[in-house]
Length: 69
Image (cartoon, rainbow, N blue to C red):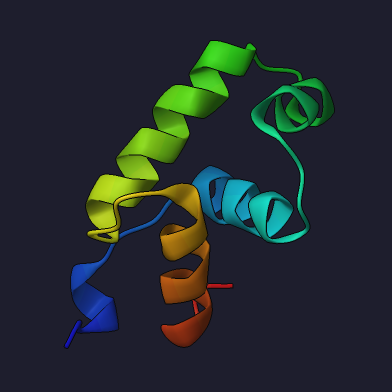
């Protein structure tokens, strides 16, 4: 079980998780946030590591369960 206090997410990571949960792709998120698509992909990788998830779908599901989004 995860302790929410041990998982530190930035506001930008939370925003990315919210957009992912709405079905947006990295390209769409990048356009919306005025960042490069590769930057979003890198940030998603970091989010997956922080949430101990093997993909973005698992990361979003875990973020919802933990109340991050």
